Length: 325
Image (cartoon, rainbow, N blue to C red):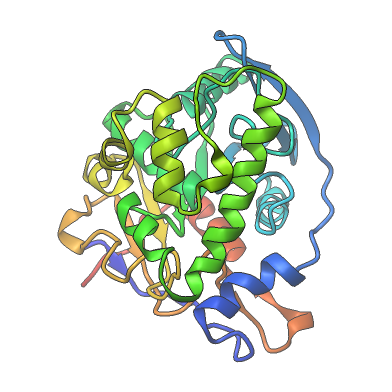
């Protein structure tokens, strides 16, 4: 079955889930890479901000960031640089309203909004003459990517995909983030979501009558804002329809899912089981790694970022890895 062993070994100085999760966000120096900004105007009057790097003639890999992420997220530039060094041209898409620039319409983005990645794919295909080679999604971006690939099935023109630290079941993630130290992540992210709401709806009229400053949990915010803005019947409808785990079995292109068993954003039972994975999907699930961490190395000044290593390996390996139980 398509579960593969992991070569990841956590740094001895970052053994725990929270240490792996927090250290790169707080202490990693962002690599410097040359970026080209492009604003993609959309048919509905909104826009997507794109950030390109790497050789102009390289095979294109799309990158989708996590909740309230951006080109400045701790994992983005290192990932793009690693792929650039192997000849790939990378394109990070800011989800609507991310990166500190409010979008124009009341709708924004969410864990299941796959029409914007599709518009990006169509744009890249039309402008370059061929579809992107691959795509990488991180956290929320990984959930969007897996759902999108499942919706497309064998119609997907991508040749490779990779999803990292995916929530899989949104209800599980919302519940887990109300428990223990994981509440710190919820508080941090909800604060940013509320601020983004204020920033946008100070410029345009909000269709909602809600005091977002009183929303303290993901479940509350997703019910009062996310679901309401995007046409869902409520938070349960949103979580049920947009959780990516149910779409994994429909994926038909080679896809690697990298997920730590101790990810503090979800329960250990949240990832799909072996019998849910089609032959094209590989699940690499080391015991440790945290949420978008996966940091090795002997000293803090010599940290190694397994996400970057594994992404390059996956995108450059022409042979599917041998799967086993």
